[in-house]
Image (cartoon, rainbow, N blue to C red; front, side, top):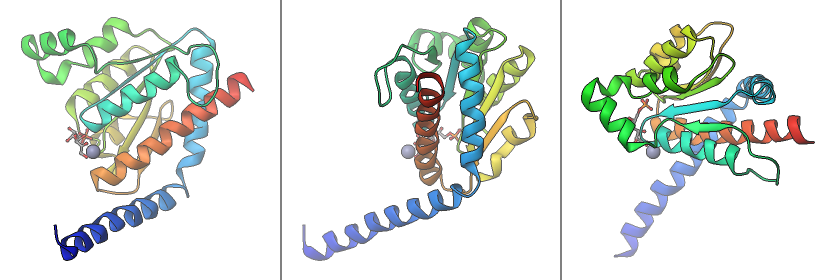
Length: 200
Ligand SMILES: O=C(CO)[C@@H](O)[C@H](O)[C@H](O)[C@H](O)COP(=O)(O)O
Ligand SMILES: [Zn+2]
């Protein structure tokens, strides 16, 4: 590989850092207060015996799993296990529901099967338009399950489904990669806040 190619790729990689920093700086102006509200809701849910269910597609499925792992396992300190489940991991459920019903139902059927009033659904969609996340949110709201939605791109269709009982963290970007990177900061902010509120 010649030096020019390395330099071209270095500049592209550098731009990713700069763009990511810019989106995070813009998000920092408004989203920390919503993280705080999310932390309060989650701590209350967990202390009352509720659980957090998380869902999303692609990179957001990975985020849902990442978050559940940090609640069940740990974030930055030793503490008791916290009740969380990613709805993205049971390949038998995902293939059966996707095959027999529709891919749009893969999360909503799990919300109806596993969810209880007082739980929280964390729905993650960078576009705000993924139908399976939308249907999971609709199912949750019918069951008295509070929704914390992570979106971007203006919030998409998910924005119009939410009301004042819910918490909407919308990243100010329309670029999927940048939104996902900021979602991860929000997830870690939730983990940190829950640990602080429940265990400090
Ligand atoms: O990670 C990426 C792109 O960075 C992709 O896997 C991305 O998550 C997938 O295209 C998702 O299906 C996008 O869904 P959503 O975020 O719009 O709900
Ligand atoms: Zn990605």
